[in-house]
Image (cartoon, rainbow, N blue to C red; front, side, top):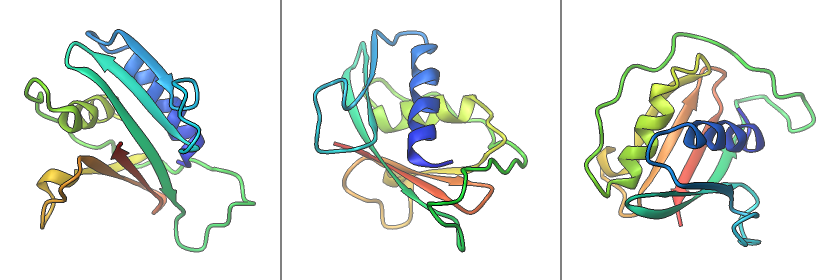
Length: 133
């Protein structure tokens, strides 16, 4: 799933999630620096997420974005209040998209990255890096 389609996917999921008061693309939120991303406002405040894509091996940008389905990613535990990274991971996981093979929160990955974010692995070998900005 390429960044533009993933952005639409994330926007739709967030819009339909209880407790969300505002959802918009980064461009609609006034961010002209990042081509893809979402701004999501909940009771815990606003979180802005940049979306960067990595194509699957051998894939070219000129080729169409063809979904590859597999077993949906498993369930996710409910995040703690204020845990924007965990909240977004849970929203994506609950969708049970057959395109998503795995979701790895950066804070719990080996070596734990300092900035919050997620790596979303797709069944076609592509990845989306979702970085909190």
